[in-house]
Image 1 (cartoon, rainbow, N blue to C red):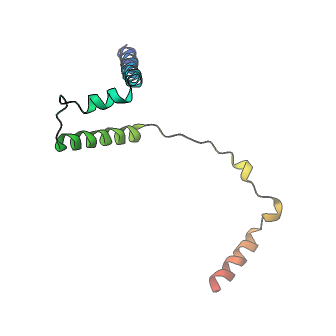
Image 2 (image 1 turned 30 degrees about the vertical axis):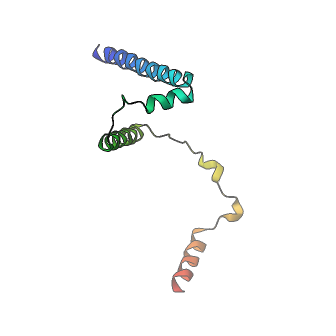
Length: 105
């Protein structure tokens, strides 16, 4: 029962976060270039270099953790496609003879 609740909590959080990012993106896209520069250059934004560095490093760390936790793709390979033709095959005795010749060089 707890796993079902946790599943719905995760699903609700996912919808909430995705919608917030979408709303923020739409809001930014509706603003013009001059409005964006006015917001970034306004006097209400007082950031010194340590805060900028801290938040930049925090963003890099969060992005790195996201990439590490992201599941990696699994590729299924059919090795029958890579089967060599009979002309390329050699017997075991021929292989051993060529190996001995290569080692003696």
